[in-house]
Image (cartoon, rainbow, N blue to C red):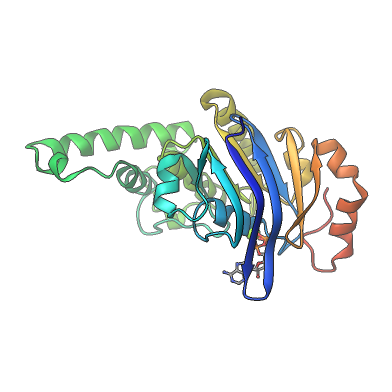
Length: 259
Ligand SMILES: Nc1ncnc2c1ncn2[C@@H]1O[C@H](COP(=O)(O)OP(=O)(O)OP(=O)(O)O)[C@@H](O)[C@H]1O
Ligand SMILES: [Mg+2]
């Protein structure tokens, strides 16, 4: 059974259809790339899966449950985490503090936990240890005490992933995680995605413009154009698909042809 299953999902904003009749399956532990020119509806697809918007039509099932229209925190609790195209970090807090905030929010201790003597401190200690572990996992230990806003761009993207992992997801949605990264940072990111999948069995959907970057990473590439899925398959086949080439080359201000 697919972990995530979109059926005929449509998202309209007034007269504009951003996502149209979209079917998408993601199996447990699978890496899927979602590509397409600017304005194709990629981020909107993430927004309906994570509950930012209730889809106008269609069904979204996660781990067998219907989640379309549920609130973002409920969907997060079920095991769906994401990063944002426009980085959302607490810029004035350190990297470690950013992760601790995410961990605390994911745990949401009840009233009794907070009132139990000594429990607050115990919890703080646990959160700190977990934050250290997550930063280590992403190779960010050396910047743990640096303000998020002063980190290099690539590290900010990694810190966003650390925050997403704090919720212990089964499905991770990454919205252009490689944007603004230099080639060596991109390579590290690729290795990280492969590791998250191998070590933690995470299913990952990756929005990305650079098909070459997802070539070795994704088992499947789904291509959106004007809200519609125009192609889907193994990266090598999708890259040669005339409809895909047309979508990228046909639009004058598209994000560039798939490399
Ligand atoms: N809240 C909203 N209200 C109105 N229109 C929206 C809203 N969100 C997205 N859109 C529109 O939906 C279309 C798809 O946008 P979306 O951000 O999903 O594209 P994208 O594929 O992520 O593009 P990019 O590669 O530039 O990030 C665009 O025309 C956008 O302007
Ligand atoms: Mg987008």
